[in-house]
Every structure is written in structure tokens, then in C-alpha cells.
Length: 351
Image (cartoon, rainbow, N blue to C red; front, top):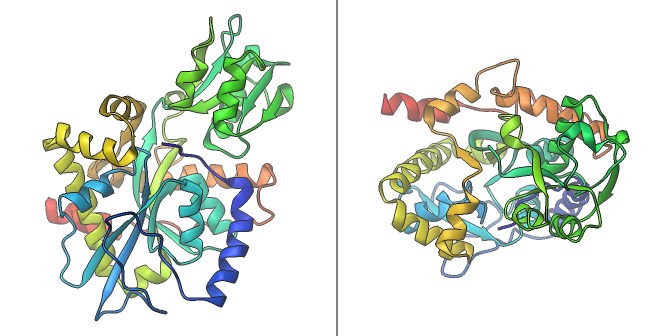
């Protein structure tokens, strides 16, 4: 159930995807047993329209599986086509290439996509990481301040790299005060478990492997920085402009799916675990460091603010990070990246 941010690759993805779009019609990646979408040069026509929504094994993304299995997408004009991804990175590229109409993805990836020219709009805040992302250190290192001069493994440009930066800043340190070893998240956790580095910044379930090292401990996590690491539902702006009623149906079905899960927890967990190819126990455990936002929490998140309870504030922080890290040469304009009208319409209907 790998979930990661992909700063270093998304620029290349955007260039490649743009070339593919200019050369051929979109081809949708369809999971086994999923309904076949209508593919054309303009797949979202009023006569025969589909809405292609990407999701993956991250628990915050999995309610779309329940939307499909419980037949919770209600629209007379639009066919719901959930598109499953074993590789999260591919879903980001497919949004850029117009092979998806919407995707559940990290806010940090959305900001970078916009910076690289993809016109994406956030309509929902899916979740906040509340402990799933961790900085883990060996015995004798008891806080982020103790990391000075130490070797830390993490994957460059990931949400966990960002978490490490936040923890260092809180301790009065910077990235230059530690020796960073960049590698794939799974390898970063394994390197720490093998005693090759002093600390690591990784997410669940890889953090579980890291904690197997004798004397190791969590010295910081996403729960220390509420709202810093978020996932969102993003749509291509063109799709929203042409199909606002389909977007509204998607937002409605998302919250209906959350309600279904709450009322049928055991059955829903079984379905989501099976799709994720893990046991129910593993699936439930993976979601413990995650907070899926309800309607009221979403409404609050879309309000302007001066801390990370505001999704716009968080996005502006992330914009500075990706520029400072050299992950983009462009400073994106995020003023039009958020659209809460569908959320508000659902809330008003539910009173």
C-alpha cells in the first residue's frame, strides 16, 4: 500500500504526458472487473459521459472502492469509472495526461503538478496524516535536536522528507545540520533497521520495519504537525467546467461512501483489504495514523487561515518547500486551485 510524493519525477511526467496527449487519444488504465469507460477525443460528452477517478491502496483513497461495490454513485447522465493503481506515481501522470478526470493524491503532489502547468482543482480534503508518517531514531537519539551531525535516510521529495524538515525546523536545525541519505522509502526503512543510518523518515507500513531495530523509537510524527500532510480529491479544471453536475455527484458519493463504511465497518474493511491485497488486520492497522475528514471538517479546512487547519495555508507552505528544494523552477499561482462550491452544495442539502 505504497503512498508517496514524487517531486523529482513529476516534471518529466508532465512533459512526457503532454507529448502523449498531443500524439494519441487517451487510453484509460482499467482495473480488472471494472466497467469499460467510453474513450473518445472528448470522453465526457453529455450523450455518453464517464467520470474516471483514480485511487490506490492508501486507506484515505479506498472509499472509492466502496462507492463502486455498493453502487453509491448516483447520476443519470454519468458513468462512474474507478481506476485502480498499484503504482501511485502512475495516477499522477495520468491526471496530467488527461487519462483521469479526478484523482485522490497528496496535496504536495497537486501543488507541484500545478507548478509544472497541470490545471488541477482541489474540491475535497480527503485526509490528514495523524501519525502514519514518522521520524524514527536509534537508541541515544531522543529528539529531533539530537539529529545534528547524524545520518538520516528518507526518500527525496516525499511527504516524509517534508516531515523531517518540519521536525528539524522545530528543533532549531536545518537540512544542512544532518547527513541525508536519499533512497526509496522501503530501502530507507531497511537501511535504518540494518544499522546503516542513525535515523529515518518513512511512512506506515515501512515505519513498522524500522521500529524492529533494537532500541529504536519514534522522535517525531505527523501528529506533531496537524494538517501538514494531507491528501485531496483533485479534478482537471476542464472537466469541472464542462461537467459540474458530474463533479457534484462525485462529491455526494464520496460522503455517502464514508457513511456506508461507518455503518458497515466490518464488511467495508474486508472489501477494502481484499482490493489492497492485504489482510483485514493489516489494512485496519495501516489506517490508524490517518484522519479522514467529514463534511464539517472539510468546510473548516477550506476557510482562509493562518495555520495548517487551512488547506490553502498548507499549500502555500508546500509551494515554498518545492521551490526551496529546487523541485521546480516555477513559482505556482495557487489562488484558483481550491473550489468548495460542491462541498458547500452537499452540506446545504444535508443541513
